[in-house]
Length: 76
Image (cartoon, rainbow, N blue to C red):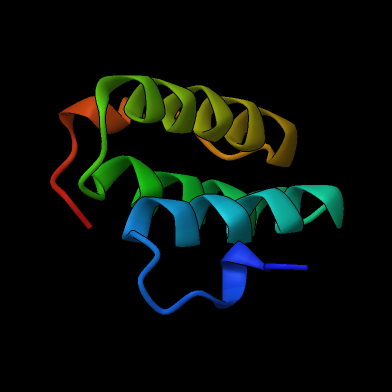
């Protein structure tokens, strides 16, 4: 079966999102928040950017990180 995580041509957003999703499933929410922040800063459409921001908010909340508005931060 084709594994998108191993595809060399995959876009940056997808790489960060897949990594962040895996970290969330492992309960590593602080690290997942960092990857969602990078996904948000990656070239992507408005829907993906909104999803990355929502996941970042959730992971930051669960991990106890001080929530910052990533839409106002510089690209990573």
